[in-house]
Image 1 (tube, rainbow, N blue to C red):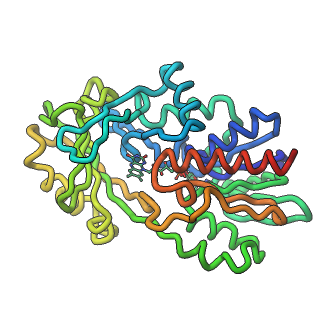
Image 2: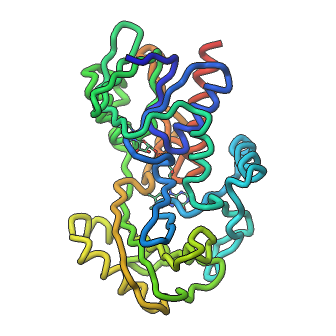
Length: 324
Ligand SMILES: Cc1cc2nc3c(=O)[nH]c(=O)nc-3n(C[C@H](O)[C@H](O)[C@H](O)COP(=O)(O)OP(=O)(O)OC[C@H]3O[C@@H](n4cnc5c(N)ncnc54)[C@H](O)[C@@H]3O)c2cc1C
């Protein structure tokens, strides 16, 4: 049994920033994630020698708190500006859109380097013992902490809290359960030549079934191989959630045919159960000090990387304030 002051569930941007702030303030903190990597929906993967961002494609910064971190990452070469305006865009104001220097997981990986993050540790059961939490994982490990911060997408966080058997949110449990997310499908494709997409290599699409296309070589993360990311809209994702890849992949590729000038050599599909919260919680976090837990993530901060980041930072600030 391993014990820390704080245990963060989720090594996405919200969990990692929360853990960083707590650790920088001298608290002991451990992070668990069920995945094999860091970053959650800031995800990069390899396919046939190509490198592709298949979740979040870029992020923006408006708040000085998040800007401080982004400035550190820019100085360390972890992130860079990708573009300020898309070719087709009617609404792209000229503010910077950042990406990881070699993929969107770069900033999460950089944060994780200084933290105790346990990967492949899926929390499956929460037990409240006196003033402490015990978290059991699928790998049959146990972690103890005085306070839990759960940053999994909210429906998953609530399912996990339900395992405690406690009345953990009182009258607010119903409203928390009403927060809904959209789903999405990604198809990743390797091409035998240039995609033909215009600079900066990404296009917002408004015609179903696609919502986005990006050439990861033009983006600068797949130097050797032309590798394209396609995102579907929520309607197509709902319609084809259970279709085999051999059905949904070709449908998405056919919809992109007029945009891509080279032949597809191979493709791979991925389901995203939580792309963006449709009706986020009105506050940056939800906390129950009596039971020693805090909920954070984009269900609270709002639908983007920055929203998730600000929620994680707010969770840490709230905990440090109540601790002092
Ligand atoms: C396809 C797609 C495209 C997007 N595009 C953009 C974009 O271009 N720009 C933008 O700003 N945002 C975009 N977003 C949204 C952005 O990625 C998210 O808002 C943000 O990354 C959420 O961060 P988070 O830390 O709240 O959650 P996550 O990144 O989801 O992190 C939560 C973590 O919790 C872990 N977890 C869950 N359950 C458990 C458990 N039981 N035990 C242990 N670990 C657990 C998960 O493995 C995950 O790593 C996109 C999202 C998707 C899916």
